[in-house]
Length: 325
Image 1: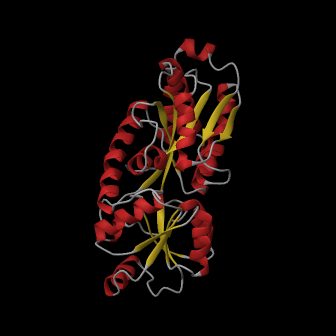
Image 2: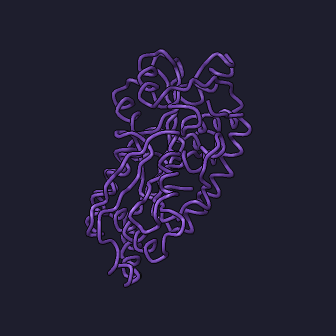
Image 3: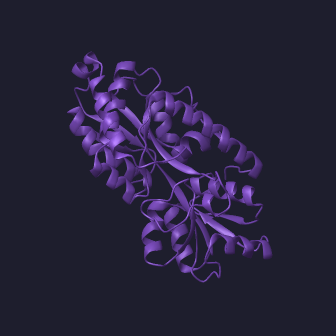
């Protein structure tokens, strides 16, 4: 799934979408504040994505969109709360790809990604970055691969935890390159990044938000990003795909969903308000600071994204034998 920066297209989509908005939905909804559930603690990537879009969404809807945190179980607690909520449009969820398409493969969940929610639209997506401590002699991805082939299974890589975006992306990289590295699961991206900067571990696969300032400060060295296109925040860092692995892609994405049974007119209104929000240059800039790009789409396209990624990551998880702790 390519992530492109096409501001004029976003603006045109938003204008068309608002013109097609159902009149009944516009008049009747919303008439009180809307809760937007986030399945993680404040300060993380999901929180940053939510806070990038909620101010303008609130303005366009004429009611506050209030972020509410329900962390725990890899995002499952917020997902299950959404599933159980009244389908009236006043409880929404900015769900991430980890909870939606990875978690169900590694632990039992009470929700079905394709049946428990009403898709509204994707908000943002971004790649991850493969990075190393500056003391590692490899300065490029080819040099890193050569180093690992020379000393197989002697290096470990850090991620934010079992089944997280960094974990499955790194395992996909191992499968495609045939390399051996041991996974070290941390309790969050912060501790993993701290140890990578400190040299306690030499390799890490991280979301872009916590890595960008450390890369720019030369505290860690970026070898490649996992999106098909270079990250706008790190234009000098090549993609893994362009360094000998065409088609390699691993994205974290954030999507707006509601409970199954959410009326179609409310879905239509929310999708179009989201499209207009994502067409804002200010919102795009906020997202890019976090290593994310605005990715407006339709409910049907979001459903196809979920279906495709469930299949893709299911195969990676099975091949890598990833299991919940």
